[in-house]
Amino acid sequence: MANSPQAKKRARQNAARFAVNKMRRSRIRTYLRAVEEAIASGDQTAAAAALKAAQPEIMRGVTKGIMHKNTAARKVSRLAARVKAVG
Image (cartoon, helix red, strand yellow):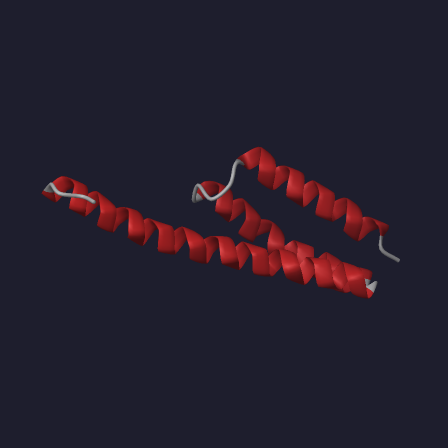
């Protein structure tokens, strides 16, 4: 357990950052789930629209430090290929 004032402050900051990052990760996963559901339904226009909405959210996760840029690029690329294959 943190004893010094600095360590106590860092513990508070870490808890706050964890909460914000968790919220951002959850938001990204929600967008990804929408794309997955649109792909599963077989509707290419809905899937393309969901991907278009998800893409900036995924890239925002990169700028906020939630995921690595290559991971985000890989996810977007694979989703785009799956959306293209629908229908």
